[in-house]
Amino acid sequence: MVMTMGELWTQVGSLMATVVFVCAIIQQYFPDPLRGHIDRYAHKLTGFLYPYITITFPEYTGERLRRSEAFTAIQNYLASRSSIRATRMRAEAVKNTKSLILSMDDNEEVIDEYEGVKIWWTSTKVMLNNKSFSRYPSNDEKRSYQLTFHRQHREIILETFIHHIMEEGKSVEKKNRQRKLYMNSSKNEWWHKSNWRHVPFEHPAKFRTLAMDPEMKQGLINDLIKFKNGKEYYEKVGKAWKRGYLLYGPPGTGKSTMIAAIANFMEYDVYDLELTSVKDNSELKKLLIEISNKSIIVIEDIDCSLDLTGQRKKKKTEDEEDKEMKDPVKEAEKEEEKQSKVTLSGLLNFIDGIWSACGGERLIIFTTNHKEKLDEALIRRGRMDKHIEMSYCSFAAFKVLSMNYLDVEWHESYHRIDQLLKETEMTPADVAENLMPKYEGEETDECFKRLVNALERGKEEAKKKAEEEAEAAKEAEKEKEEKEAATKKEEESSIYTAENNGIKCNGVATKEAKENGHMENNQNS
Ligand SMILES: Nc1ncnc2c1ncn2[C@@H]1O[C@H](COP(=O)(O)OP(=O)(O)OP(=O)(O)O)[C@@H](O)[C@H]1O
Ligand SMILES: [Mg+2]
Image (cartoon, rainbow, N blue to C red):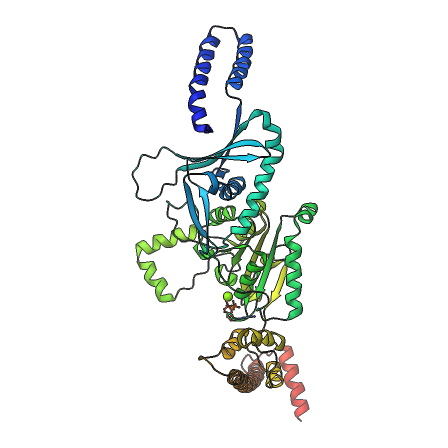
C-alpha cells in the first residue's frame, strides 16, 4: 500500500524534532566557529532522514492583493487529475452549468506522477487567529498548495514539471473557463475579499451580428488580433501590454453591444467599472490591482462620471442642495464626499500609470455620447489608441440587421430603404426594433413595411424640424438685425444730444464737437 505524505510526516516528524532539539542543546556548549559545522551536519542528517523537498504555492501574493497565477494554474491542473485519486473533492459548475469541474478539497492530498517521478500534492487551509465570532465567512484564511518530491528529482521537477503544470493548468482553464462579468460595488462589505462582484458573462453579441461599416469592422478585428498576438512586440517596444478604445456616438448605435462582441471574440472577462461608486483614487488603484489578465475594463458614459476639471459630477436641483445645507448629517456626508473622490488625474493614472502595468493583455474601453465634452488628456493616443465612431444606421449595417432579425438577404424594399437611410438618421437600435417580428408568424413583408413607414415618418419629422429650425434661425436673424438697427439709432441720437450739449449747455464746446457740428451744418446747407 502506498504511504501518504501525511503518514510519512508523522513518522519522520518526531525523529526530526528530536534531531533539531539535540542539535540546539549541543550548540550551546560549543564556541561560535564550531556551531557552523554542527549546523551543516544537522542539515545533512535531517536531509538523510527526510530526503524530500516541499514547495509551497500560496493563494495570494503581494500582501494578499492579487491571486497568484501559479495557484490558479495548479488548481486547474489538479482539477483534471484529482478527480481520479482524491477522496474529497469540491464541485463547481461551469459553462452554463452543463458540466462540472472537480477540484481537490481543502486539506486533501493526492499523488501525482510525472515521467515516472512520484509527486505529492497537498492542499492546506489555515485559519489565522481570529477569535471574534462571526456569521460571515472569514477573510482570514490562508490557502496554499504544497508540492513534495524526492530531492533526487529536483532537476526534473524544477526544470520541466513546474513549467508543465503551468501550461497544462492554463489550457484546462481555457477549456473550462466560464467568462465573468465583474462590477465594482459601492458598498464595501468587509467580509468580501474582493471589491469586485461577478456573474457569468453570457452576452450573445458577435462581430458577425454587429451592424456597422464592414471595413471599419474588419479594421477593428485586425487590430484586436494584432493585440492578442502582440506579447513579444509590446515587450520589444517597452510598452505595457494594453490598448485603449474610445467608442463614441449617439445612444442606440451599438457601443455596449460592440463591447460584448469584443469580449466574446477575445474570450476576455469584462470589468464594468462604475466610477461614481469609487470612493477615491486609492480605491481605484486597489480595483485595478485585482483585475486579472485577459480582461476588458469598461467605463461607460465617461462624460457623466467625471467632469473636465476632474470633479465628481453630481447633478442636483437647487432645492435638493438647499435642503442638504440645512441638514447637518447630509452636510457632513457632503463634506466627506468632497474629500473622497476620483479625480481626472487619478483616472489617468489608472489607465497608464505605473500600476497599470502590473498585469497584461488588457483592453480599456470608454464609451460616450459626447466625445467633444471629454478632456483631451483623457483621449489622446496612447491612452485611447483607437477612436471608433458608432454612427447612425447605414445601408450596409441595415443588411446585417436584416440577416440577423429576418434571415433575409434581399427584398424588393431594399432600394427604397437604401435611399431613405441616406436621407434620414435612424439608429441601428431603432432599425432593429422595426425589423423584429411582433407576433408569431409575422410576414417579413410586414416588417420591412414597418421599417419603411418609420423611415418615412422620420424623414418627414426631420424635414419639419429642419424647416422649423430654419424659421427659428430666420426669426433670430431678423431679431438680431432689428436689435442692431435699434442700437445704431440710439447711438446716433446720443451723439446728436452730445453735440447739442457740447455747444449749448457747456457754453464752452469742445473743439471737436464744434468742428463736427459746423461741418454737419455746412453739409446740410
Ligand atoms: N450596430 C448594432 N448592431 C447590432 N445591434 C445593434 C447595433 N446598435 C444597436 N443595436 C441593438 O440595439 C440595442 C441597443 O444598443 P446598445 O445598447 O449597444 O447601444 P449604445 O450605443 O450602447 O447606447 P447608449 O449610448 O444609450 O448606451 C442593442 O440591444 C442591440 O440589439
Ligand atoms: Mg450603452
